[in-house]
Each structure stands twice: as structure tokens, then as C-alpha cells.
Length: 241
Length: 244
Ligand SMILES: Nc1ncnc2c1ncn2[C@@H]1O[C@H](COP(=O)(O)OP(=O)(O)OP(=O)(O)O)[C@@H](O)[C@H]1O
Ligand SMILES: [Mg+2]
Image (cartoon, rainbow over all chains, first blue to last red; front, side):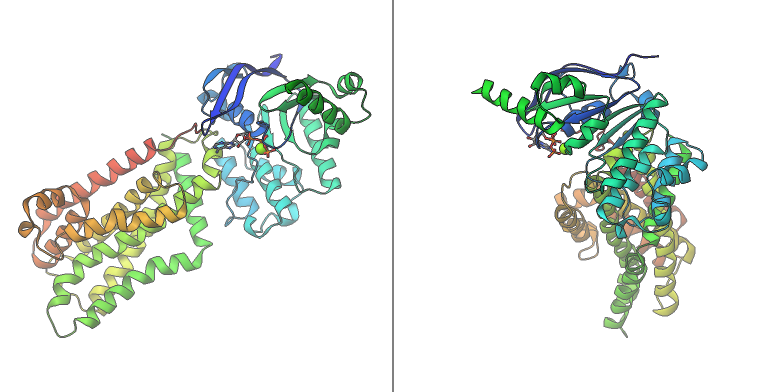
């Protein structure tokens, strides 16, 4: 059993001429749900892209499940959900999930399971383009779940979902972690921090905090994740001045 | 390279097309309408017999070029390509999957358009009609393969649509329809010797004018197939797993 699902050392990423991540080192422990939080533009999606191996990196090493990010051998083992749903609008939910299942060599039965896991059973035969925003992002999530990957990398999977659905999805993430899967989940919604085993707080491409929620609350004296988050950002901004 | 992933990708692309009735109708009907129009414009003259067959090669080529380049560009901009390339999907599987799907459409289109030209518009064909169909399929495939390649250089759908005139119209001017290729200025003649549409049009001309066109058609067809393969290989090189 590996201790870390992801090990990043000295990662530097330049996008469009701007240094988005100047030099980042971090560990994502295996078998946990790790929340990736940070203001808009702080580099969450960029970090996630580096982990799944689709981001050109300027320097540093990113190791995933013991191998360099982007290795061919990892392609069966990682599930990736992009920030904007990447599914085929003109195909039904089931056709989308079935397509990803056949590429991943997943059994046919896993298709309906993945659809049920995101609670889209009643819309399985609707074209994705005719679904609501939240339903589309769940269809996108189902396409990642269907391969039963060891590591799930999810970029804001709960955006636009109601509280009940968000709770159900976080329950699902917790169950997957309990089965030994690792999850790296970015989010904007602060109360979701409470559902993570561990939190990574990014600001301008740097790690502001890498701790559990209770640790963070203690360190900042805040009563909730949002308070702790604001306190840390304010402190960093103070220090930068 | 993986046959299974190629085939499921082709099936997926076809399923997407099937959901889009209007595009299918356009792919099948537009070449027929253009050919019908041509026959009507030149009724009672020998022009249709001279131009009909070459244009039977050109129209499917253009239609497939546009449809394919927009379809693959959509895949790039929607994020599905980025996602697919994090899965075991190979770049070659992806390209071949698209080529296979549009190859199926090309066969359908060629059968419909050739049938229409020969039996409805009365196009005179000296050689065997099946060879006309085969060449039309190859021309449509060539359009697809070049469309796949061109979409690699387009960032937006506007650009992809602009590539149509940029890639296709120069070939159209030089392919021997307006001025016979051997009467072109030397430099342009050499250029037209390289461009694939010239061979597409040559092959069509040969089948309609010669009673036993076998050898000449085979030579032209070989060049077209070479271009198809080269475009697919180059196209898969433009797919990047990592992007900035
Ligand atoms: N395709 C791109 N080309 C150039 N720069 C980019 C690109 N995408 C993002 N950036 C830049 O990289 C920085 C980090 O962006 P990133 O998408 O990683 O932020 P994020 O934390 O995911 O934001 P959000 O919460 O809004 O999704 C931003 O400053 C952005 O301008
Ligand atoms: Mg983002």
C-alpha cells in the first residue's frame, strides 16, 4: 500500500507567459478525500491538470500512484473530471458512460452502477445536451467513476448542485475513500471542507495550508472553514504587503 | 494501436451523427443538389458530361472536409479530447476512429451522389460505375483526412470554417477543372502535381472517358490513399496529451 497517492516536488507551471505555480511541493495521502480550496485563479485547475498529466510543466516532478504523472500505465488507474463537464452533448447519459467504459475496458454492469451512483438513473436515456447544468456535471462524473479508478481527480464536481445532491456525492466520495480509493477534489464551497479528510489551501499557486480542518480551525481561531480560509488569506496578503 | 478502441470511437462518432439528422441530410443531399443544379444549368450541352464527374469528386470532398474539421474541433474545445487522452485511448485510435466513422459516411454519400448523377441526371460514364463510386469514396475520405489535419491548426470554429477556403479553394483552382493542368504555368503545374485534389479529379475524368480505366485510376487512387494516410499520421501528431 502506497502512503501517498500524489507526490509533487518543486512544481513550476507557466501559462500564457505568466507563472501560475511558482514552486509547489505537496503530498496527497492515499485512501483519503483531499479538498483543494482556493480563490478563483489560484491555480487549482492547473494543479489538477498537472496531476492528471495534461499540463505542460516548466520544472519539478509530479508522481502519481508511484509513477511520473502522465505515464501510459496510469491511464487505467486515474479518473479525471474537468471543471466544465466534458461529455458528448448529443449522446445520452448511458451512451456517454458506456463509451468511456469500453475505452477503459470496464464491465458492462459498471455502466448502470456509475449512473446510479450519481443519481441519474431517471435520465439515463436523455441526451446530455438536454440536461440541466448540475445533471451534466453528474454525467461527466459518472464517466470517471465507471472505470473504478484508484485515484479520482475531480475539478469542482459539485458546482451548481443542491444541498441534498452535494451531500449524497460527498457520501459517495467518503465511501470510495473507505474502500481505499484516493480522491483529490477541488471546491469553492467552504462548507464542503468539513467533508474532506484533509485540506489544501492554494493562493496564487502556493500552498497556504495543508492540514486537517480541526488543525486549521485551531491555528486560526476561526469557527468554520470559511472563517479559517479568510483568516489565512488575509494573513498571507498582509505578509505580502 | 487498439482495434477495440478504434471501433468504439467510430461507433460513438456515428451515434453522434445519427442524433443530428440535419447534418446527415446535408451530407447526403447537398452533393446531389449541386450535381442536379449543374446538370440543369448545362442541359442540352456536353458540359455536364465533362464537368459532372470531376465535381462528383469535389463536392463530397468539400462537404466531408467541413464536417470532419468542425466535429474534431468540437472535441478539442469541449474538453472531451483532453479527457480522452488521460484514458488508455491512443492518438492513432482516436484518428482512425474518426476516419472509420466518416469513411462509413463517405460510402453512403458516394453511393447516393453517384447514383443520383448517373441514373437521375444521366451522367455518361464510359468505364464501370463501381469505379466511379470507389473514387468518390476515396475523395470523400480525403476530405475527411484533410479536415482532421486542418482542425489541428484551428483554435476556434470560426478558424476551422475559414480553413475550408484556405485548404480547398486553391486546390480547386489548380485541379484541372478551370484550366487543364498541362496548360497551367510551369510553377503552378508542379504545385498541382503535388495537391491531392488534382488526382481526385483526374481519376474521375478517367473513369468517365475511358472504357478500361483500370490502370490510370489505380495510379491516381494510390496517390489519394497516400495523402489520406499521410494526413492521418500528421493529424495524430498534432494531438498533444499535454497542453499549456
Ligand atoms: N488556458 C490558459 N492559458 C493561459 N493562462 C491560463 C489558462 N487557464 C488558466 N490560466 C491562468 O492560470 C491561473 C490559474 O488558473 P486556474 O484555472 O488553475 O485557476 P482555478 O484556481 O482553477 O480558478 P477557478 O476557481 O476560477 O476555477 C489564472 O491566473 C489563469 O489566468
Ligand atoms: Mg478551476
